[in-house]
Image (cartoon, rainbow, N blue to C red):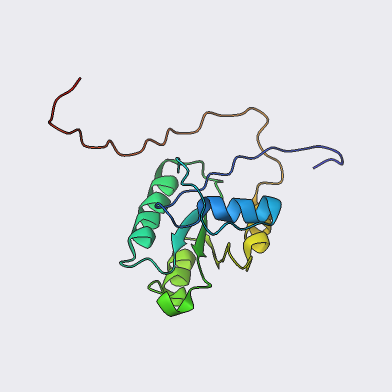
Length: 157
């Protein structure tokens, strides 16, 4: 890249509810942590290493599959195991997530938005994997639509 040229990249954080997506961003951007973060709507893949039934890890695997199937071949995928500070409550073992990441050629790092462990390193590692010469024209990405909520049969409207 030529000196002084700014490249813009989109970063999408995907993960189940309450895995720490917003907390990681706030920690990275403002170096702050709020114990009680308001939930955000929307969809790096983030799992909680203390997830009671590995639901967030299972969900992340399906996102990886979908991104690899339909996404840009140069997409950078990172799997972040957040809440690593809660070691006593761990349900997703580091080795299992790391092996999955290696098998799928994606970045893996355990993080803690609360203690700031590996938060900056995660975003730096993602940045280092971004294409050096991104395409000039911005393409429309494939749409990501959340699953439809089931409609109740009680009937107003």
